[in-house]
Length: 530
Image 1 (cartoon, helix red, strand yellow):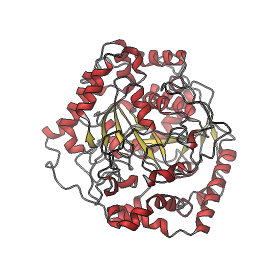
Image 2 (cartoon, helix red, strand yellow):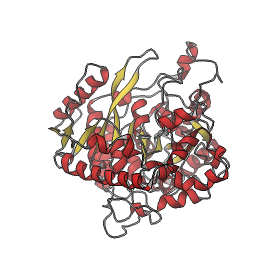
Image 3 (spheres, rainbow, N blue to C red):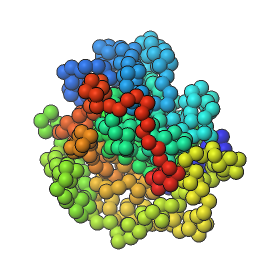
Image 4 (cartoon, rainbow, N blue to C red):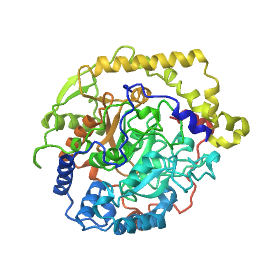
């Protein structure tokens, strides 16, 4: 695959010397004590009852499976039942691997505790990750018949840890925009507003987000180049984590922009995100971006707040940077931001006002952000020469990369490095994590971002989630997870689920099955592309 070769060419800007250690167990970084404390914390907060095992978070289901009170087959069947009943409306999946998932669940029953951290957990995988023998299209004509002979490294690690791939999810064509067919027809809807397809489910990982929000999978993985993990998470009340560039291997991921593509989890809460990242993270000799980096830490411990149920202090002393005016306003989202700051102060977080440099907006402007375009186009040049119709409605996004001059590209790369330097000095010289107003700056420079829900606002279509973004310095995922876990221990926003589709059907609040959902033009896609 020529498009994949170029994606492995660029190293991470955060690499140190040395090649790192390649641990194939799927448990790198996690200590026995940290794992024990993590599982005990999950056990303490298990819900008294649920209508279906599919309502359990991944970590809750994992605890019950480890204790022998939940059978992986039962959990898989619960998710498949919901997919069968509901996905004709949500259209979250491209491919459902029902028989494969059942067989994997049955096989895990014979492996006992050796099956790994994710034993029996049904996972939804974005359709740009290679999956052995399974159609992997990236929602593009280019890959319409592509069946890889091996798993993407992230998928391999998830399976090795006992995770079960229940299906491949819908996405934007070649990861450019919300989930669409190659000719622009809208597919996936937001799980909170299934009757209104005009409400965006988020970015290109929207199928993965809808699958988790609708409780059709316990957790999922997506990719982010320009917001496609964090934006769907914010849109659907989930916890999305974009790791530092190089922390998770990109081997076997169909590329969009090789200096900005980030694989990561889209999960129900911080504990689930930590569980997946613990397995996915680590060096891969086939991806130079992952080599020579700091060792993978114990994310499970990071996502386990200290203290008792009533007062859960932050795990480590933490300074949170707050931008001037960040919590101003009288709308529900602003109220949620202020509530977040109050609760975090009560949990022991120290607030520090930080002010970005005067060049911040200029360095992260759309002009500087355009340097991603030639990186997007270059791996696909042979397809552009062969037949432009292969790109469908996303053609304009690829053509744009042909018109950026070398001078403009170099200027943008210099701006990227200047933005990284100013962020590290002027922001993270004063704090351990920072609230963010948007994803673009941290996408440009490869720093970690986490999205989490802070409440719900009323709309004509019913309640819809709102949330916040948190950013951290290189390899600061631990801090982000510890803050998110402390917030989610003190609040219930992450536990609020979208309306049950069966109830909407009974109330006749859904349009007829098969009704048109509209489409985006080539101009729309180019404008909204990440």
